Image (cartoon, rainbow, N blue to C red; front, side, top):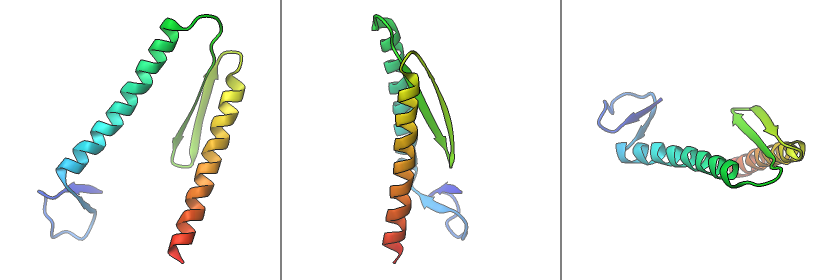
Amino acid sequence: MLRTTEENADEDQGISVSSRLFNFLILGIALVIIGIVVLAVASAALGSGSTSTGVVILIGPIPIVFGSGPNAIWLILIGIILTVVSIAIFIFMNRKWRV
């Protein structure tokens, strides 16, 4: 549970996070979402010919995968491979730093 420093700091539960840092976190997430929407709209509006899209959304360990277009299967496979590789690197680095 995240809480700001203005809240009761005597509690042992949760991680103390400054409100400024939390605002930057929310701003970063919002900018990423806005960027994805802008790229999707621009590619649909300016794209000529056939276009392909593939998306992998990773919520915890569960991937949500979808795509459209003639090359979508390749884009989805590349996304899944990159997801698996990044999780493997994270697990490897996490074990390396704990030793």
